[in-house]
Length: 143
Image 1 (tube, helix red, strand yellow):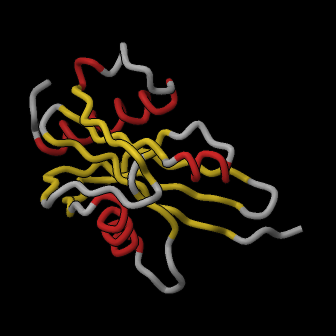
Image 2 (tube, helix red, strand yellow; image 1 turned 180 degrees about the vertical axis):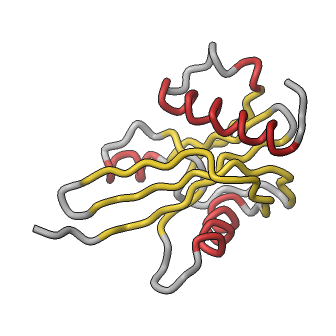
């Protein structure tokens, strides 16, 4: 049986040597039975270009505008009702005031030196490390 595709774009946002990590609201965690850690972003609307969707979702969820550096991580997940494809982008130069949408209750700017000892899941740390390599290589930043 064929399943519909759902494409989502997420932003792994860096500000110098810090990365933005969001904590989903209690309601979001309960409704979706999820671990609760997140990056800003979400699904594309019909006929919406990928970069427009990313910019819209980041603005809706954080109030920030960012500069997309490059794709950093792509994966797919075949779920019961759909085939989900998620593209995560390394982003930087956040501007604006960080104001969370009701989907999230907390945010953390985590210094890259503190990432390994942090409470975040290993899959998230690996995605951040990969995005940070993309970010620093593209920007010519020495690590």
